[in-house]
Length: 150
Image 1 (tube, rainbow, N blue to C red):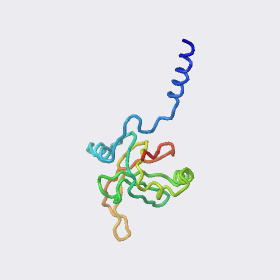
Image 2: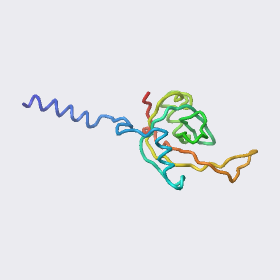
Image 3: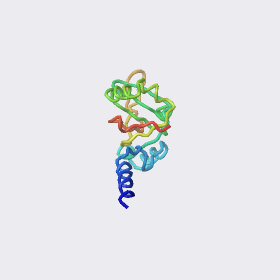
Image 4: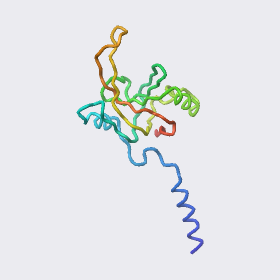
């Protein structure tokens, strides 16, 4: 009896402390995230927490921020953008050994965080206008919150 209990206890301890994938409880697709964010009367006030799944089809950078987009055209409604700071960019570059904006193109990823609508001012002739639209963003605040799944 003792011989059987010890291996079972060892197995249980490893499975309890094994790293679980970010999406182990289910993931939210790009379309689901956008629908959930749009379900509120005021687009900019809704937030959705979870693990988001997307294939990186476009990337970009502006100022000190970097972006992974589910669509090549990041301006369309059904796009989900993962945004992160220069600090996270440097850590991802070290982790992957390459520029993450190039390395992650075509990869399916899971990102744990909070999706929300971000107000974007349209720019015409190099000047900011009063015209606005909203994009769906998840801020990546730690490299442990992103993983490549495919």
